[in-house]
Amino acid sequence: MENPLKIVIVGCSGRMGHVLLECVFADGELVLHGAVDRGDVDGVVNPHLGRDAGEQLGKLSGVKVVDDIAAALKGADVLVDFTRPEASMNYLAACQQAKVAMVIGTTGFSNEQKLAITDASKDIGIVFAPNMSVGVTLLINLVQSAAKVLSEGYDIEIIEAHHRHKVDAPSGTALRLGEAAASALGRNLEQCAIYGREGVTGERDPSTIGFATVRGGDVVGDHTVLFAGIGERVELTHKASSRATFALGALRAAKFLNGKASGLFDMQDVLNLR
Image 1 (spheres, rainbow, N blue to C red):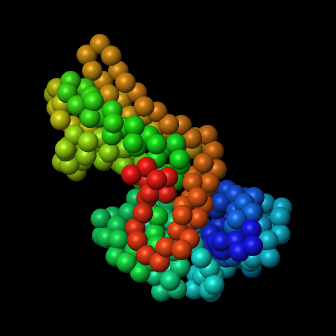
Image 2: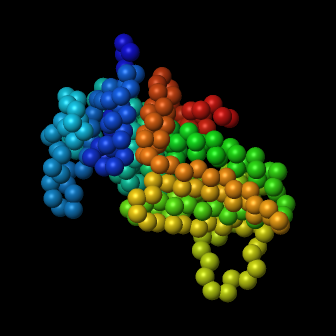
Image 3: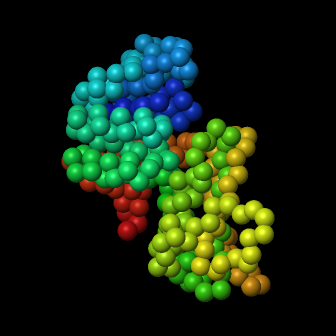
C-alpha cells in the first residue's frame, strides 16, 4: 500500500500487545508507528524499554518501545488500546490532544470513564467495543433477534469463561450481550441483571437476566447466551481459541477510522450491521 495506516500499539509487551504486533507486521495496509509500554513493572524498570518492538517476536521493526505516549503519537493515525481502564484514560487524553483516532478494546470502565470516552469522541474518531471479534459482533445481533422471538416463557442466562488473569467480571462482552437481550425486550439491564446466587434464593424471577462467571487456566474467551424454556433450550455460543480474533477485529476498526475526524463507533458500525 502506498500510504499505509500508521498504528501505535500501547501495552505492546503484554499478551494482546504481542498479537497486535504480529498482525500489524503481517498487514500490508498497516505500519507500526509507535510502541508504548509502562516505564516500570512492579517497581522494576521495564526491560523492553528502548528495545526494538519487534525484537520479542524475532523481527526488527525500527520502532523502539517507549513510555512517552505524546512522542509516540506524533504523526500517527490510530492508537490501539487493550490495557486497563486507568491507563486507557491517559491514552485517551493524549490522543485527544494529538488528534489521533483511537480503538479501545479495554473493558471494566466505570460510567464516569465511559462518559469521558463519549466526550472525547467529539474531537477524535473512536471505536469502543468490549469485544473486537467479528464473530462476537454477529452474536450480539443474533441475541437481539432471539430475544424478540423468545420474549415469553424463556429465561435468559449468560455464561462466560476467561483465563485466570482477567481482572473484571462479568466480562465486558457478557454485559454487552446482556444489554442486547435487555434492549430487545424493553428492559434496563441495570435493573434486571442478577450477578450471583447463593443460599435460598427463591424461585427465579422471569424478568431477570442471570450471569455466571468462570475464571481459570488460559481460556481466551467463551460466551454463551442461554434461552431456557419449557421442554427446550436455545443456546448461542461463541468461543475464541486465539487472541488473534480480537487483534484482527481491532485493526479492521483502525482502518474503519481512517478519514473520520470525530465520532463514537462500535464494531456494529465497523461491520455495517446497523
